[in-house]
Image (cartoon, rainbow, N blue to C red; front, top):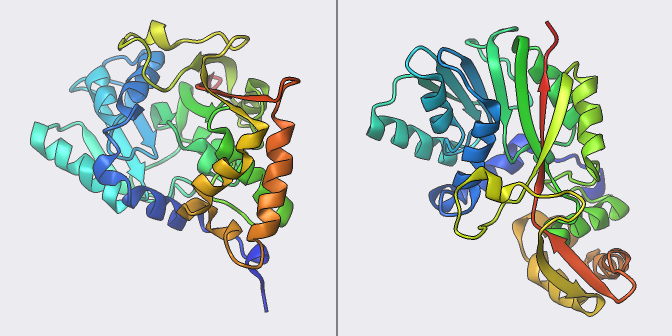
Length: 298
């Protein structure tokens, strides 16, 4: 009999479960402001064609539609019916005519209305780390960019949401896949390498904090120095059980919560958590993501 450790995850099903449950409240977070900053970094021009991957409730889609104007168009793709229901309701409420939505996996863009060399800009905000094979996805997405087009995506700082990335490391050691894949991205160069392998050039990065910051909406207030990132919280090695118990009951950690593995998972979590501590025993959690922007040659 196959064990859970040998059964691969279904990314599309994971995304539907994760985001259908969050759809109604998703906009009541830091995500709307962060999405606006992602759009600002694109410097959209009137008439441009935009593809918004993992568009969710439209937090990137709608500001992008404003940026490209009536002569431009934005295509949003998401696998979550709950998130798309929110996005379509907004589109109807505001009577916006330059947006099209499709329910589809972003790891397989075989959609009739999409074709190679179609888009000036492709966004994938707050979603690349949910893909098991992000490099492969980036290579696929680049085909849909026009020559000279831009692709903009982001990955979480490895010390952001540190309890979750620690669970991911535990899952990898136990052969139990969790529905996020942040471990491959330990520094901006890891994302840069994937963007380059996808055929993109002129790549540059911005480091942005995600959460609230001095009650400001200005993107300048959220740009951070990578050498001195914003510290969101400080923990100690003694917080191991507290952090484990806080998250082990969540859906994403289910593969580690079964009776046959939970105690071993706790032990490995303790080992991995201790590795994060500095000489004084402190573990600092960073608030921030790397935003990478690359251009297709031509």
